[in-house]
Length: 335
Image (cartoon, rainbow, N blue to C red; front, side, top):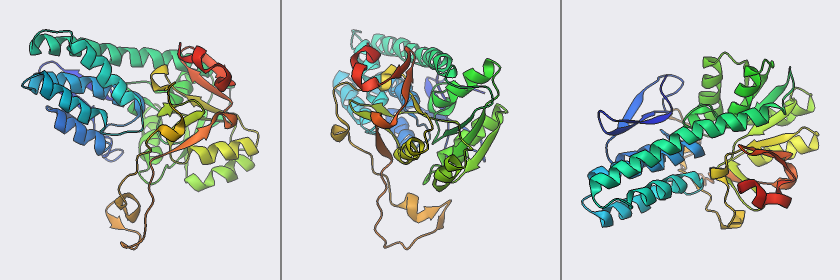
């Protein structure tokens, strides 16, 4: 199986797994132009903060191939950076690859520089996730049942994963770990993607609805909660909508709640109040798998993310280690 996203030298395209079709179909999409990549990002064919970082970087390579000049390239990169506004990694990847590109004197040199940097970001992502997973695996005991939300596995990254990477690393060390996956409405990344990934790896997983998490925690069916992060800010973590709910419930039942996130997802400059929370189409709630499930004229509120304060988080796991009371030593975490 290929990585979630990668560059094809032969066709000079960005290849990615179309996550909108899983688990029914496994299909590879090729993007030849920046506009195609932007469309894939907006449609969630590729998603997950670390994967978006790589997508942003490879988008710069496409821009260098197709742009007529530097001015057009920069304009396209502004559009790419804002294809999805909440996760910081997309703009991080664009900025890193664009800065490398601009060191070249011709578009050919710029493309070569951007590709080298984009490949470096992709390789770093896998290495970072495995290091993060190694640190986080120490938090899991043999026999633990771990609840997770949305998809923070290899499909959200270039490979391995953050929250699921911790679980994979613990299993590699010989620990028996089971997973409870919340469906993650309205787009069901938990049921469609996380369950698919874990089944592929033969990791035991039980699917529940989002609204069941309080009941399973109260009934002592959960030992730990681990989620990913789209952005870590001064006061806490921005992640898939529903994360805050699980954190509140975990705190009430004295269950450790962990966040697994690479340093590239940290944003030292901003409060959560300064971050644009993406609001997605009302159709995601009005329809399910193409079938209408609500009155078309009902008001819909559909934010894709929510904010969870550090007070509810036992620790944040990064490639630098496990950081408890993170708000007190934020600067030391991001280096």
